[in-house]
Amino acid sequence: MAGSQEEFQDWILAGRVAAQALSFGKEKISAGKSVMEILDNVEQFILENGAIPAFPAQISVNEVAAHFCPTSAEDYTLKEGDVVKLDVGACVNGAIGDCAFTVDLSGGKHEKLLEASKKALHEALSLVKPGILIREISEAIQKAIKSYGFSPVRNLSGHTMDLYNIHTDPSIPNVPFDSPHRLMQGQVIAIEPFATPGDGVVEEKGKPNVFMLKSERNTRHPYAREILKLIKNSNGLPFSRRLIEKSIGAPKTALGLSVLSREGIIAEFPPLVEKTNSLVSQFEHTVIVLEKPVITTLID
Picture 1 (tube, one colour):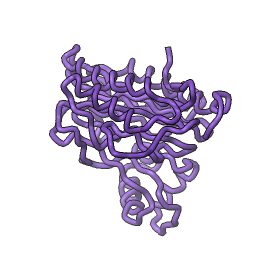
Picture 2: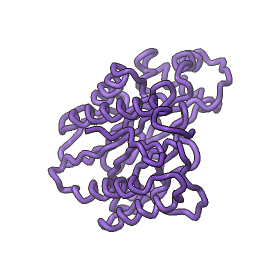
Picture 3: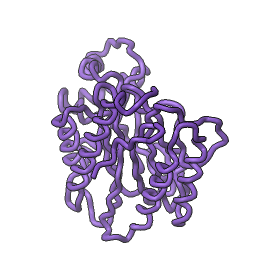
Picture 4: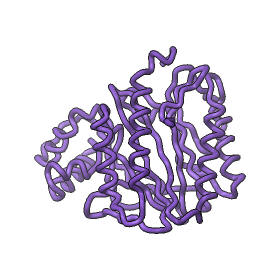
């Protein structure tokens, strides 16, 4: 992609809806609130504002860095002291806005942890321009987080995006690698620094509730076929177990998803947990790489 702001109107609109949904969701985050209820409300907000979810809205708490998207069976009630990450994506005609924010329910006890990832995002965004080496952005993220005494999460990264595709190459790592990749005019990227007092490595842990179609092969299993019908208009965007359960119930969903995964038709994304069970903070914006970059998820 290349060109002027006028050529990116869907991307700008998707970013605006994502940012508004994030702001809407942030206001609902407080001790005693149901994670699933907040996520349902955020996704409904996106639909009511002219977009669709680019991926299931997620609230990941404390040591969980990403991909926590519970059904009623795993719902979590937020508590005082929690570090709560809300990650939201909106899609308009394939264009995507992706943003995240962390809320500290400890009354400020973890303020420095939040500031570390927020400062890293600010420093990274200030460097965005066509031609810059991606590793320079990664260096700025790492330096900012370490300046607060924390570690960047090494195996999570930002990403470039394309129509109906939220993760394309190259990625935008949170630590520098010896890579020749540079940002290109017209790319759309999401930058998302994660900071932790732990080792800075996440691992998959727990039941997957986020999925994505990876093969359009048919299946003979009736429940699996029902699920494929439900996601046939998703254009390959990720979907949640919760969404399927609302249509066909939990038992059919569990068996159908198991079959689709076993047959290699869908990919699973379990929760990502910091290896030492340390807290994680995250902030994220989407930006169009132009001579004058446009942060699509930045609202007043």
